[in-house]
Length: 168
Length: 328
Image (cartoon, rainbow over all chains, first blue to last red; front, side, top):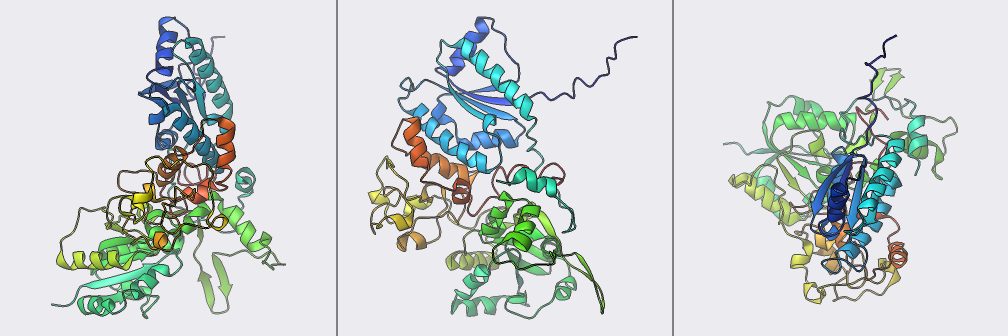
C-alpha cells in the first residue's frame, strides 16, 4: 500500500520564535554557530539589535501579539556589555516583564533571556533547540486575532472550561 | 442658523466624566449658548427614540465616555456614530478601557461567579444569574448581555478624536469645544491633549536626578512624602515618564504619584510596558536576587501599569480569556 503523502504534516504545530540578539555577543555567537556548521532548529527569526538594552518590552509584546509563540532575548554576559550597563537594564526589565506576563496568562517558558558570549556558538544551538521543544509542548499562543468580533452571548452560557483555565 | 447639536453619552463608566462637564462651572453657560444638547441622559430627559429619530450626522459632535462591555453599549455606540459628524472618545475608559478594562484579567464566567455567588457580600441562595430574556406579565422583556471582554470605543466604532483623563481636565474639554466650533481641527485620530510626557512639565522636574536610581519601591502610605522632591526619586511608582501631560499635575500637586490616567504619548504603543521599561531600568542593582527582592515592592504589575488601559494595550486581555472568534 502506498504511503499516504496527504498526512497533514504542514498542519503540525511549528513554533515561531522571534529572537532579539545583541550585536556584540549573541548575534556574533549565532554567526559562529553558522560558520561552524552547527545545525539547530530553524524556528527562530533573529532580529539584531545593537544591545540587549535596546530591547523595549513593547517589542516583546508586539512579537507575541503579531504571531510569535515565544521570544528569545540574547545579550552579553554580566560585566561584558559593550555599553557597560545595557544588559543589566535588559535584566531588570525582563524580570519585571516576566511578572507582568504571568498575570497576563502567558506561560513562563515563552519569554526567555540568555547571556551568550560571542564565542558560544554551541550555546545558541542548545538554547534554541531547548526553547523550540518547550514551546512545541506548550502549543501555539494565538494572539493575532484579538480582540475578537462581538457576538451576543447568553449570560447563562456555561464557560466552566474558561473558569478553570483562567484562574489566576 | 440653528446652533450645532451635541450629545453626551455614558457606557461602562462611573459618572466622573459628566462631573467634569459640571466642573466647567460658569463656563458651561458659554457652551450652552453655543451648542444645543440634544442627548445627555445623565443630565436631561432624552430617550433613545429621540436619537433614532434624528437624521444621520445630525449631531455635530457626540462625546461618549465609558468602555464598551454590554450589547446595549455597543448598539448605542453604533447608533450615536451614525448620528454624529464627529465622535469623541471622552475620558480614559472610552479611549483606553479605563478602570473597567481591568476586568479583562478575568473571564466573563469568573466575574459572574464572583459577583453572583462568591463575593462576601452576596446573598443569592437561589443562585440567580442575569438573564437576557424574561417573561413579565406585561410581555416579553429583552435585556442586554455582558460581552466577553471590555473594549475601548474605537474597538467598536470609528472614533474621530480622543480626550484623555480620569476625568478629563476641563481645560481640554473647553479647548475641544472651541476647536469644534471654530472648525480648526487637528488630523482625525488625534488625542486632544499636549503630546509630551508628564515629567517634561512637572513642577518637580528640577529635583529629578539624571539617573534616579531606585533602591526600594515604596507605596504612598509607607513613607512621609517630600512635597518638593521628584516622586520617582523617593521610590514611588510615578508613571510620569511615560504618561501624557495636560492634567495640570493635579496628582503631583496633591503630593501623590501619577497613576497614568492620561494614557501614553503618541510615540508609545503600549503604555504599560513603556512605563515598566522606564521604571525597571532605574533599579539600583545588577544582582538577580536583589532585583527580584526589589520587584516584590510592586505587588500588582498589571494593575499598576495597565490601570487605565488594559483593553488598549498590546495584549488586550489575559491570555485564555478571549481567543480566536470569541470562543474561549
